[in-house]
Length: 207
Length: 292
Ligand code: SF4
Ligand code: SF4
Image 1 (cartoon, chains in turn purple, red):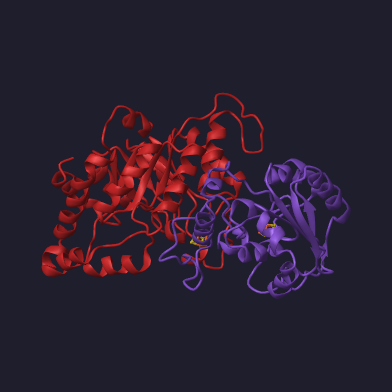
Image 2 (cartoon, rainbow over the protein chains, first blue to last red; image 1 turned 30 degrees about the horizontal axis):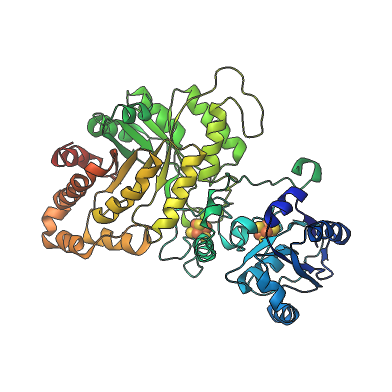
C-alpha cells in the first residue's frame, strides 16, 4: 500500500506560478490512497487564476499505453500548457515525464509507504515512496531508485562511461538526470538548496 | 593548522595520501610519513578506502598529529548516519584535527564486505552543509552546541577529466554553495583536459589541488582506464611505461610522467595532492623533479 499526499499549497503554487498548466489526476490503482477532495479544492483555486488549459482524471497513468490513449484527446490543451502538473504517485509522474520529453512535468504529490501489501510496480519505473518526492528537481527521474546510493544532491564520482560504479549494466541515474535536465533547458534546478533526506515516517516528526 | 590559511597566503599547497593498515600496527605508516612526507603541507588519511575495512581514519590522523604532521581527516557517508558523522567530526575538532575532506564514498559492494548495509544518510554535499552548520554552532537537528563551535578547512573532491565534466562542474558548484573551502581532484593524466576544466572552475574562486597518482606500470595504467572513474591514461604514456621495464619498475618512469603533469598544470592550480598508493618513498623525488 502507498499513500500520496499533496505537496504544500505554496510548493504547488510555485510550480504553477504564472504559467499555463495542464493537470493530470491519477486515481490510481487500489493500492494507492489518493487525496481526492483536497486535490479538487486546490485545482479549483488554480483554475480560478485562468491558467489551467485543461485537465483529466484517469487511472493507471503508470501504464504508458493507457496513458497515451487517455491523453490523445487533450493534445491541444497539453500543447498550450508550459507545465504538466501531475497528481499521482511517483511512478505515474515518471511515466509522464518520460513521455513528454521536452515539457516541464511536475509532481504535485509526495508518496509515502503504508504497511501492508504494495501494489505491483509496473515496467521500468520505480518509486520507493520516500515521502518527499524529488522529481521536480530531477527532471522527472527518481533519484531514490535510479541511483544505487539514492543520492539527492547530484552524482557521486563513481560513474564510468555512463555506467554506475555498482553495476556495469546500469546507467548512472544522475547522468540520466543531468542529460534530461539539459534537454529540458532546466539545468538551473541543480542550483536548488542542499537536499537532506527525511527518514522519519511518523507524520509528526516528518514535518 | 588549517590548509586554507596557506591557500590564502598564496602558497602552493602539497599534500599526500596515506591509507591505514588492516590491523592495529601503525608504526610502519608513521615511519614512512615521517621519513618521506614531513616536508609537505598535509597528509590525507583515507576512510576505509574502496570500502575495504581498515584501521580508522580519525585514530590515524591523531597518531600523525602526535608525530608533528598535519593530517586531513577523510570522511565518507558510506558507513555512518548523520549522528555518527557529526559526532566523529566533533571528535576530530576536540583532538585538534582541523582539516577535513568530505566525500560520498564508494558503495559497500565495491569492497571486502559487500554484504554490508550502505548508509548514505547524507552525501558529500549535505555533509559539507552539516559541517558548516556545526561551525555556526548548531547541529543538523537544529540543536545548539555547547561552547565555542569548531572551525575547519572543509575540503571536497571533483573529477576534472571525467567524460561528464559539465555534470562534475554542476556538482562542484553545489559543493561550493554548501560551503566547501578547497578541492582535491581525481588523478589527472591529461593536462589539457585539466586546464580546460580549471578555466571553468575558476569562477567558483576556490583553491584546487591537482590530483596525482604515480603510474607504477603499464598494467596499472590499463587497469585504471578500465576501472577507475574519471581517469584516462593516454596511450603514449602507456607506451612510455612499457619501453624500459627496469626503469619503470624502479619508479623512475612514473615519477618522470607525474612530474611532467605537475609542471604543466601548476600555473593553473593552487596545489597538488599526491596519492602514492604505497610509493610514499617516491614523493620527495617527484617534488624535486617537478621543482616544487
Ligand atoms: S522521489 Fe522517487 S521514491 Fe520519492 S516519491 Fe518521488 S518517485 Fe517516489
Ligand atoms: S554512479 Fe551514478 S547511479 Fe551509481 S551511485 Fe553514483 S551517482 Fe548513483
